[in-house]
Amino acid sequence: MKRTIHTKQLAILSVIIAFNVALSYVIKIPVPATNGFVNLVEAGIFLAAILGGARSGLIVGGLSGLLLDLLAGYPQWMIFSLVIHGLEGLIVGYFGYQRRPISQAVGLIIGSIIMIIGYVLAGAFLYNWTAGFASIIGNVAQSVMGLIVAIILVPVFKNVPQVDLKI
Image (tube, rainbow, N blue to C red; front, side, top):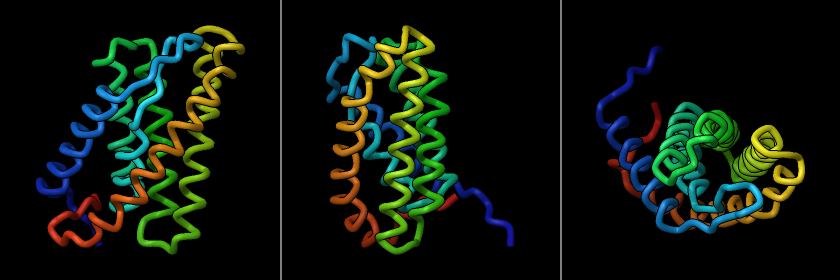
């Protein structure tokens, strides 16, 4: 059975992307060593992936990362963020959508590790290995903050029947 993409789901994902970018733009901590910043972008990615699955996580992750970097003045990171956060959302959604909490935890951990390693490699590519490794602590903190926000919001959104994030 083929699932069609409905306007309602796209609208909800668009709102999550917009909210995610706005929240992450307002709450950001600069990291001078990498010319980047720590933010709450993982919260929206984790939320969309767990509630909507791999495809929703991919869309929200990739577009949130890309748009945030573009609007925040870090265009050198845009393509890296598109790929890294998109892959992160895909993995979290694959393991976490409609699964038990242990499977969700595995997805969140693997997705976070992908994001952390991805930014180490991107930082090394853009600057040097020192800058890449300097990003680890900030990205771990970013994942933990996103995880906390998602853990609080997932049960809330699960109880709202009008919110269907599955594409």
